[in-house]
Structure formats: C-alpha cells, structure tokens
Length: 378
Image (cartoon, rainbow, N blue to C red; front, side):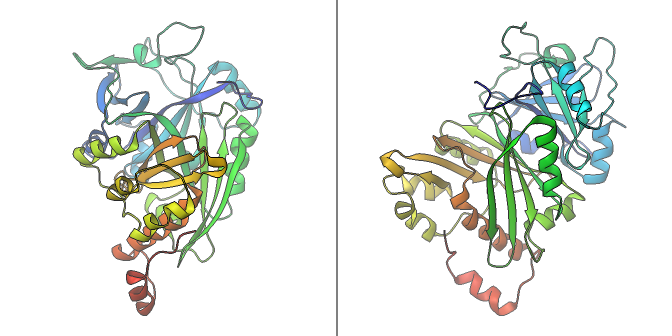
C-alpha cells in the first residue's frame, strides 16, 4: 500500500497490542472467547503471545516490568502497543528529535532491543522493524527470535475469522484532545480524517479520528462532552487515567464471525432497538444487506449508497471484560469511516447500560421515560 502522505517514521501498520493484569486468569478467558490461541511464550520473561490471523496480542506478567507496574495502577488493561516501522533505529531517532520521551527496556541475552517511546497514559509505544510480510528482508520476526512456539501449535490460527487490527481508540481527559492529536501529528505526521460531536439524551462526547501516513494505523481520540458523568468520564475513573479504550478487529464476514464469537461465549453490548433496523432502508436505500440477519445479531450498519454503489461498514461491540477496555468487531465493504451514523444510537445504548448499572444517575421520572421510549436515530 502506497503512503497517503509523508511518512517520516516509516510506519507500516500495527504489530501488537500489549496487555497486563495483576494476575493470570483475567486476560486468558477473554482472548480465548474471541478466538485467539496462545501460540508462544517468551524465552526469558513471563510473557505470552496470543494470535488470530495477523493479529498479535501480548500478555505480560513479568514481575517488576513496566507492564507489572502498569497493572498495579490500572488493573487489567492494554498497557502498550507496537507500530511496524521500516527501520526502527531511524524511526526512534526521528521521534526523539521531535520531542518524544524515550523508554528504556532491558532485553535478555540473545534477545532484541526494541526501541520504544512513552505513549497515551504512560503506556509504551514500541517500534518494530522485524515483522512478517516486510518486503526486502528475511522472514524472521520478533517472535521467531524472542519467543518459543508451543509444541504442535498452529502458529497462525484462523480463530473466529478476524484478520488485522483496524483501529485503536484512546479516551482522554477534558481539554487534552489537542495535546494527544499534536502528539501523533508532530511525531508521526498523522492527519485528522473525522471529527464528531455526539450528544446522547443525558451525556455527550467529542471524537477526533486520526490516520497515519501509511493508511493502516487509525487512532480516534474521545473526550467527555459538556456536563460530564458519561461513558468517557466513567472509563477515566475506572481506568485511573487516560488510555486505550477499545481495539477494533476487522474480518471479511461479520455475520459468520459473530456466530463463532457467540458460540465461543463473547458477551456483546446491548443492541439498539427495533426502530434502528426499521429505519436502515430509509438511511441507506439499496444497501443490499439482510436486515433480519443483522437485527438477530445486533450488528450495526453505516456508510452510504449514493450513486447506487453501497459503501458500507458493519460493526458490533463486546462488553468491557479487560477492566473498562473492550473490543469492537467490524467488516468494511468500501466504507472507511467509523460508524458516524451509528454513534448516536450506540451512544444512547451505552447510556442505557450505564443507567441499568447505576453508573449514570438521572431524574427518576426522566429515567422511566427513557426506558420505554424508542431511541432516536440520526
């Protein structure tokens, strides 16, 4: 894929997301139900590699490591992520020259030293130039060098059918969106591609979506709307700071993948009401999708059908299971957005969940109306 614009760090997609937890047993069931398989363990550290398709998840339990300290402060969470780069040394030097905070790591004997900088909420952002599919290099990835594959394991399991990480969303404190947008823009030359100001019945949020020069890394930034007490504020309180809110995984057939996820036991967020699906033909005339199949599964649809050519996005969200962090599952059929048309319906669905859990307090009379009234859809 040709770069969209100048790519000073040589970005080439996501390599992995790193997770941590105070103890084993909190991450593993979540990864398993989503179709991931533990395929390798680190040669010298208490670190596991979980994989599905081209998606790598790292579970880091190494005592007194950065992940260990991160888990003490934030609980089960996503504590880091890695960007693929064409040359890690050159990328690191560029980022440091632009003002990035360096992060030291201590590799063991015969292990790779992976350059890293400080990222969102203190998480680590790694720079990896040994990865599968890189043109002009040998086939050895960081996992071939630093990890040992488990005996007899399929090293690239199909799992539930997800292929790569599509985007990774951050939640930030009020007034901090500009700071984190500048972080990605000044260091990596990200560009803004979407801006949303979403208002639910009781709360709201502002979202700015950024894309990297390679077109493969997308990072939306979310900030609580006026009034507070909404889902972003709840995340920041529960997470104890800014951080990675959710990770979106992409597939080729979301209906089939949903069926597998359901069979595996993934709990999904509350689906929108029937009125959402009744209005799909009006919102997206001639979309060509099986609305009944979508409604049975609570799958959301957005995009455009202008010009008689449907360009669609299908999406659904799992409940938060790694602390307040959750996963999104999507299928793109020509649409490169983030489900803007679904945001209001989804946002109010999450508000209802907050109310049901007691996390959002509203006037008793208003709450009774909200429970029976259909959710308005943009």
